[in-house]
Image (spheres, protein in one colour):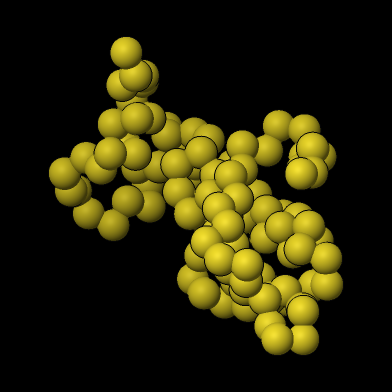
Length: 105
Ligand SMILES: [Zn+2]
């Protein structure tokens, strides 16, 4: 529907219902957006903290992505930098396996 959502932003928007949209980047969910009865969209970050209210859905998406971007550059795009805030050693997740290079065949 919209073509412009940032030149190289690897975002995916999953529309669950008419009033619920989840935003995901390459490997993780970074937030979601819900619509109020008054047709206003509220964006929440990955910690479920409200970012703000927006009237066009696209504005909410942009805000959500903008909010996530610093984290994204630190944590999502570079797996080299992920080790430092890893809470504990755990079994690799599917996304970690995907990161390690091409499970697709
Ligand atoms: Zn990200």
